[in-house]
Amino acid sequence: MEYYAYRRMNMDNSIKDYREIITENPYKEMWNHLNYFADADYVDKKVRERFELKDGKHVNCTKKRAKSIAYSMQQAHNYFRASQEVDLSVKPVLIYYGMVSLANVIFLYNLDSLKSPKIERDHGLELKPINDSGNSTQGILENISCEICKNKDSGQPYGHFKNFYNSIVPECVFVKQTFSENDNFLSCKKPFENVKKLEIGNLVVRKFELLTMLRFLPDMIGQLHLNSIDQNLCSGVLEHKARKPKQNKEIIIEINFSINELSSEKKEYFENLYRQNKAISSSSISNYPRNLHFLYKSEIESENHYFPDMVQDLQGNIYYIYNAEEYIQELANLYICFYCTGMLCRYSPDYWMNWLEKNVGFRHLMDSLCSVAIRKFPNLILNQLTQSINHFHL
Image (cartoon, rainbow, N blue to C red; front, side, top):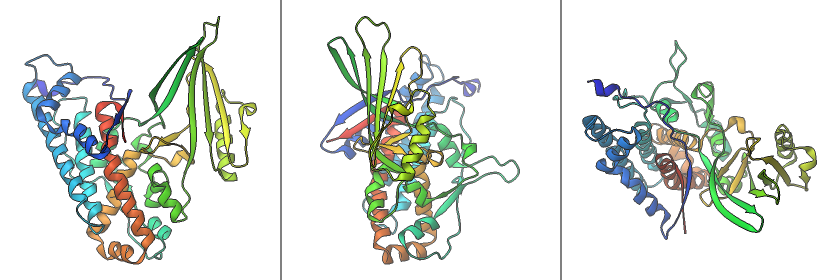
């Protein structure tokens, strides 16, 4: 049984590349890519490559791992397909269990050991009791919350969510980068880590309200606006330029980022936050009534490049994060949202169905959330599996 202890140290699973896939059906093409991981032979080959195994070494172990991953991917696809054939009375349950299957895929795929992992039977999240706080959309969303399960004695988290969260790497956004030298220009899109991933130990003390989680989802901004709910994201633009002036050995990095439609409170927040970075001085901030423009400069060999906290929607639009200390990765955010809504509609249909029937805003909000999750959660998992941002669009 010696082969079960095989471990590859310092395995790097980070996202490094950007791939643009133009297609008439982004959702279908996304699953065409994901379903490579529903084939056990393909997964076995990828696992062996990741562990740098020679032919004939640890064959039984990698085949077992590959089958587990392939079966979970097949189940995930079936859950997501089934979710599109039902209404909101049960849709979140099917989406949640599709997410659980995909979470199992990434957990098994990113393990740094060939030893069979401990199977976690618990969800790892606990839905908090519902109280009668009214039927307004915002009141309902504030009423739905959960916490991470933790051991009463040690305080350590346990369960499936812990395994999933610890297995994912920091998410990235893609940014257009231009390089110029003399009269020559080169343009490409590159991934950049958007927000530092928090350790799960920092999350166990938090309560996750559905309202707060939705405010950090870039593809939900339109629906939040229709329900008069303020979001924690601000639209903007980012330009990344690298240039090498004539007769200059150093490459100069210039990053322009502008933030639009800001309230006075958010404007002050971003000004204070970005002034903390040494490369941004007050003289480089241009003020407009509800906009901010920042310019970051550095020499490529002397400093780490500065990027503000930001996320990206399915179309590639950039949004800057307000109250970034409350932000968690979008994969974890969506997972928590559908644990909450899935468990509610399964175990508390009296609340769930009543809200859907009596509050049209809540119903449309949940319908949009389901559509976003069906399209985006598998895409984010694919990014993790391929270590690339996979941008599917028309």
